[in-house]
Image (tube, rainbow, N blue to C red; front, side, top):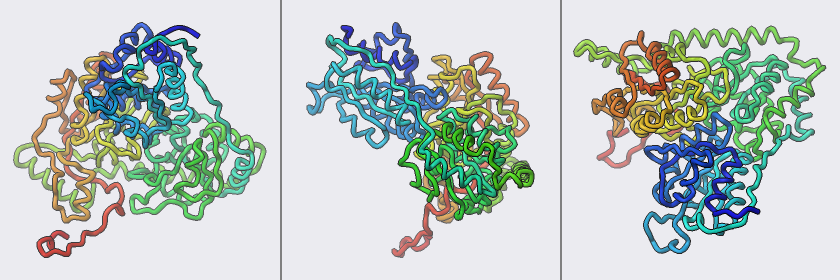
Length: 592
């Protein structure tokens, strides 16, 4: 036991867990602990808004695999974090949110910045620790850090502000590092038997492959099977794009090659994936999920097994360890699919090539509304010389110019969703999206957090103009604190994702979907201390990204690339989300 203050115990427990970076806004509620961050080797990066801080902690955790830590002033500083913690929850990020609270003698009196902070996060945390006695500061702080890793998600450490003070005798706990196993022997044997008899197996590589650092093990299993490998939705970094068996992502705006190949599967290995509903919906007019296939699902969280899709075998285990165990069981065996290895490889190659050719030729959307918007853009060009670019052409040019080892975060929106077809990676921990929570304002702060964790890697955010306006103030965090990033803003003057529903279901009656304020986001970025360029020529898109990355990596500069896009819109998130409107009152009879 060592005599120290609770503030010292809190800080020393963070040090024991390897914390060197935190995100937040300073506040009196935790100032006694914050005062000793620096001598403990902990940097507090002050942000513009606490939601940005929590997104940064998420990005930091996702790229590093370490804890991301966010802290703020009690009450409003903490409530500002709820949305970002929800996003981290669905990304399974080991984020620890430290929530200083009103002092114990003032709780319930309606004092300044008082709030009941535990219920705010109960749905989006794996564990909630509350310091009801300062003698338990190190114990409960350590448990929050342990559970964030073992439970694979955010945890909350709630500390009444008067609990930072006093004298305690304490031993700082060592971090608890768990060794996850491959799963039960019986389920692994059953899975191996299914794979041995499979004629057209397909491997679905999910987020568990990334989080478990299991890329090599995933590749080994894929190569033993000689099978197509598809990325689960928004986990485009879960298998290397340069590998001949990579076929691209499933889900919204994903790869037709992946969808056509998995549709042929008689056995699917879902490695480290919860098989979320949004990632297996019909797309591109294809209901591609193989209804009659045997499904082997591997997940470290047993509650996910069979939750969304009917499965034949559920393996409660680590993705990498399970893949290794399956390869070991298949070693020395002649598999049913071995005889068709070359034939299946040719089928893969044909589908991959066909999809790439289609993307090359798919320069713009072809639905009636988009064609009307293209005609409108052409008319504007003839009238005043303005030039608006096709989003798909822009995304293809950005893909071609994407630097090696790039990290990319995408926001929510129509163009960002279409980008799913064009974002490919060779390295894990490279792609960050708000996952199932789907909140706008995600991309910029998240990539700032990722860059803080990996300053040697290029960091790029994609955002539409609507989502961009929610978090663009965090440019000041990047420029003030020398965390250089590059942001691509698709300026199409609309809330595109939701507006698409008004096109499809509401007769193009646009309510609150337009963003026609004449904003110049490049000038706004310059006012915040960033470099900026506005692009309205397709030939300049790739070079703009190349120049921005050079400025980021060599000169430490943050750059905003504002790209002027037409109002054409890709397919909606899902076509079954709305029903055809019905009106019974006469005054609404035309609103159908």
